[in-house]
Image (tube, rainbow, N blue to C red):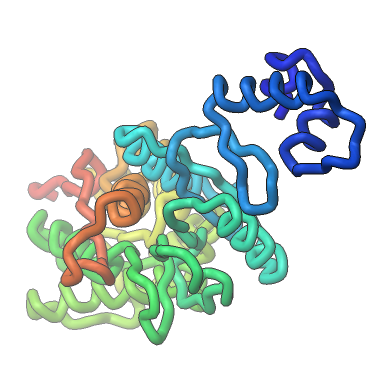
Length: 330
């Protein structure tokens, strides 16, 4: 509306009165014509409510419960944006704090704006109850899912990621492989543990309860759990941490005890956070495919995908560095 007012040489109020058809205002026919000529020149169109909307790029909405509490939300957002922009589609991002009233208000706004679709995302991989107003939109769920599978979704294949990482430790010659869990209420922690156990069973290695210790997804938990393992009944020759931050604490504890990571004892992380490549030695870990998941969601909304792929578990590949290979001559 501001652009129309500038081009027509009138106030924004005058533009509003003209576009809303308020004939009782004392606006000359010449002024009305200038406003309408400016509207045409700038490529505006009137909405049903009479308000002008400038022709613009196509838009999809991206709704997250949290953004600041984890680096992975930003990576997902970048993945959505880079894929959408390839097709000249803009992304409008909101953070809701899981406030259902706010979510529905945003979704009603997006309905009025006629966005092409909505990505509903969670910072934690989990089951969600999607807001009612989503039903009016073409929707895909990012890093979350619904029981009834009303909407397509994409989540990391956490079990396969845990299994692949544990198998790599086994292939490197390790047999006494410890696992430091995250907080047990998190699905990701449970599924990574399940993958670890699956790999051990497949290799014929007994699961030793003494080698499974609870952590907290923080460096403090990794350090405390590692010290417990070193003081326990079974000395591990490898430690698989359920995330990279616990691996940081694991490194600290091992170095306190005079161990050499990647030589006297191996370490595997999970997440592939930025810090992983800067540890010494660099941490072998599992990549969470948040960027690729964001790409997939944008592709789904803009291009559509095969119906066989609408509830996808995306692969979590292992990133090989130096920490998981032990000194085989020890």
